[in-house]
Image 1 (tube, rainbow, N blue to C red):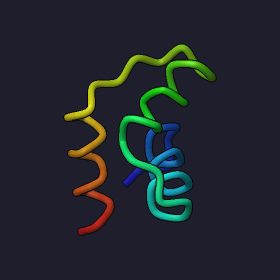
Image 2: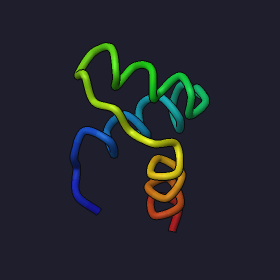
Image 3: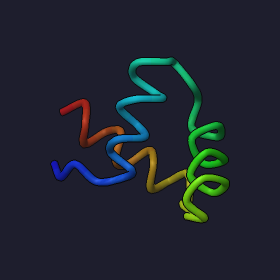
Length: 50
């Protein structure tokens, strides 16, 4: 999987820090003005765990 912004946020905040997907959505929206649906984050997370 590519090392893009979504992958970085999921690895850093979800896997290392234990934050939930709603917090990651808010982080991406505030810091990078990137609006991401929660379903996309869930799909990326499943791809990371494979």
